[in-house]
Amino acid sequence: MQTKKITSKMVIPVVTAVIAALFIYLGITKYGFWHEVRGPLPGFFPTIIGFALLALSVLAFLGGRKEEDTKYPIENWYPALGVIGIMVATLVIGMLPSLALFVILWLKVFEKYSWKTTFVGLVIIMAIVIGAFVMWLGVPFPKGLIYNLIAY
Figure 1 (cartoon, rainbow, N blue to C red):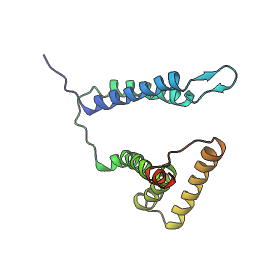
Figure 2 (cartoon, helix red, strand yellow):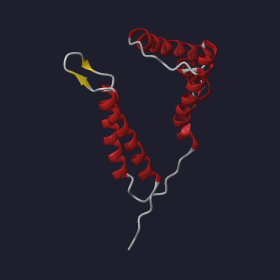
Figure 3 (tube, one colour):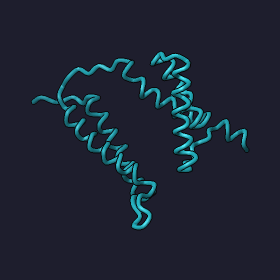
Figure 4 (cartoon, helix red, strand yellow):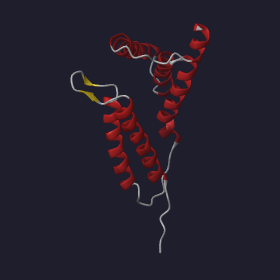
């Protein structure tokens, strides 16, 4: 009798499926999905994304059951490490400054663009984020520990 070993190609889809289930649960129960008159509620997009992530997790799990030696070069981890960096920076300096810092670091250090291109990209991205999410939709981005210490 041959036993199958558990690989990262099986564990990662299980973790993402749990995250998807959490998004679906919170989207429907805590934030609400749809209002009969007003339309989509705050939980609409998290729920939709949660269902898409759940479907992709199931497909990845089924496809990852083959036994292969998987390699994870450090370059593949840059986006994940960037997200973790943004999360930590968001706790410390706030969401908008951490996103600006991420854009500058990514374009200048990893993509090796000129300062002019980096600045133009930063201005466009921040205009979209501030214009669409802060001014238009009124999204309350986290301010960070430093802002909270100074403001209070």
